[in-house]
Image 1 (cartoon, helix red, strand yellow):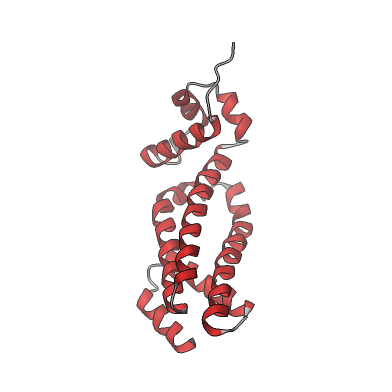
Image 2: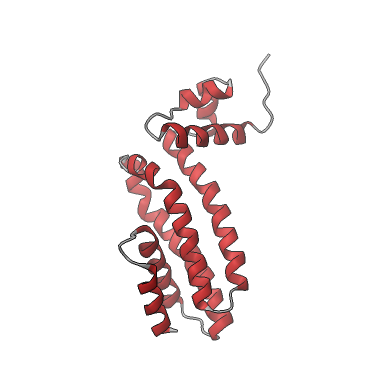
Length: 175
């Protein structure tokens, strides 16, 4: 009789996430995850076609949580500057958490091929939040500015050579 594990997909995600941060991307394997969960490796593959898909799902779960928190904060922000800082801090938080994973994960050719699509989704999510803030705080709907500011946030948050105070100073000149 097959073993029944309640909420198996969440069990797999949690174990894979634990291993990802303890062992690193290279040493976390579908087999090690399945063994720790007490299931056959084929069962893990029933949920995820590859290790890359599993890691992408782990990151997605965290990103959804962060973007949800950021969006709530931005809806309460007094102005574009406060919202911009919330967005920046959210991207920094996510980027810092996964920077060591990306060093190894990003070497995979299939991951690199999908990066432009994922970047587009990220820009869209951030620009939608910024767009709402611009309408609320400046009575201005400017899709181009929202996209531009979203790209600035991502670049500044992932490239620490761009100091936030300088980015903020430029934003103050715009708004």
